[in-house]
Length: 251
Image 1 (spheres, rainbow, N blue to C red):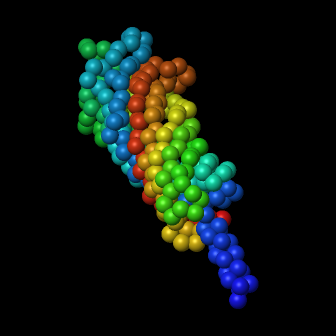
Image 2 (image 1 turned 120 degrees about the vertical axis):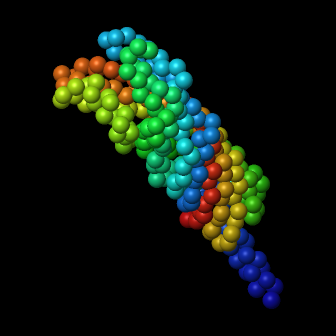
């Protein structure tokens, strides 16, 4: 009987360890992400052409909140320290603007941006590599964590409102084209959350991430000979708060 009791204790310890977020554990998590851009803004549009450089006062913009799916891979270097790579489906961001742009100065033609909603859309690719610290013992059911990370964001599939694009195309002239781009950037990231052990190898995770992020937006009218005849620029401050709720599995 004594041997059976010892064996039962050993089996129990093995099962408990299998459920732990311990050194060497790899956890894959998937879930939903809400991106809150309540603090976003854009500087007044600055336009440069042969007529000179003009700033359109009163112009600006904000990015609207959006939702996407996220996938993260968490590897525990020790029982308390983990590396986490967060990525997922690139969210589509929508920029809503206001004010009237006068690219050739106050005496030239103007265009009311408030009637063109959204003014632009783009796909954002913002993977984040986190260094996380998990509090408590590896066997705990609930483990709070904090993290700091680095992000590199780039953009694709940037599209302009058709009316805005047509106006710029007229400036470019026959055979010309309209080009729109957003600058990529390196950014810090800050994370806080908690992991909850649902059952053997399964976890629920909730976190909030702050990502201070800026990008330079450029929209140009390019003539058929390749010369840029009009360039419009603005600096967009995004600074999203990112909420994540997901389910993870320990391999």
